[in-house]
Amino acid sequence: LELAPPDERSSGSSSSGSSVRYQHNDIDRRPASTAERQRCFDNGWDIDQPEILQQWRDQEPINAHSHLLSMVLGNSETIPVAESKLVLGQWQSVLLVDLDGPRNRTVGIQLMGYQ
Image (tube, rainbow, N blue to C red; front, top):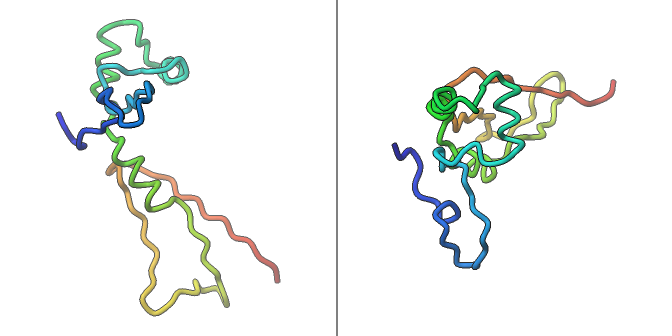
């Protein structure tokens, strides 16, 4: 299953000569760190059992492209409000882009100001 294009950082070849491997999409190598293993256990996945490990891998999305696109798009915005309305230009709008879904999301809004 190839949902994202190959990433040179996960192939082991690097023009920089770095030995660091980017393993996010290498699902057969994950969980890749002690912290990721602990998150599995904390969320009820006993990944020491091979069949449970495979179930976790089957549900884990191959989504490195989503993380990279979110860095390009950004994940927050500051929009002025005047007289209880967003202050947007004629051609401006606010978009919520889901790069890794669809799935249920929680959107946070923080209002700051004075009266």
